[in-house]
Image (cartoon, rainbow, N blue to C red; front, side, top):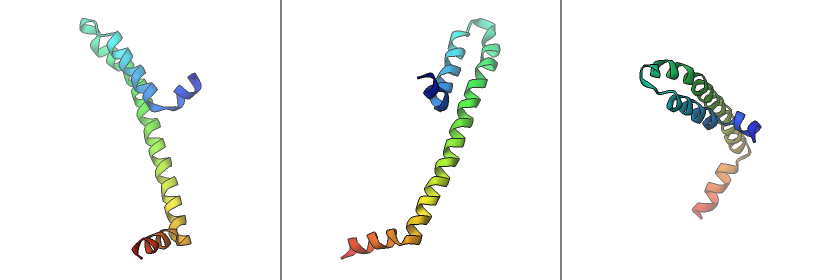
Length: 80
């Protein structure tokens, strides 16, 4: 389960928020927020990487469908 948690961005976001909430004691809020930024930045970076990878995968599938005529074929069948 820990291996799965390491590859999904929400686990880093929850870990960062847990650090922020656990360390809010008076004047130490700034120090807690600085510590909690590392998992939040890691989660954001993972989310951006996944977004780019999925965008490229979608583009590849779309180009394949256009090249093979799948999109035109299905849209022409629905007209008649």
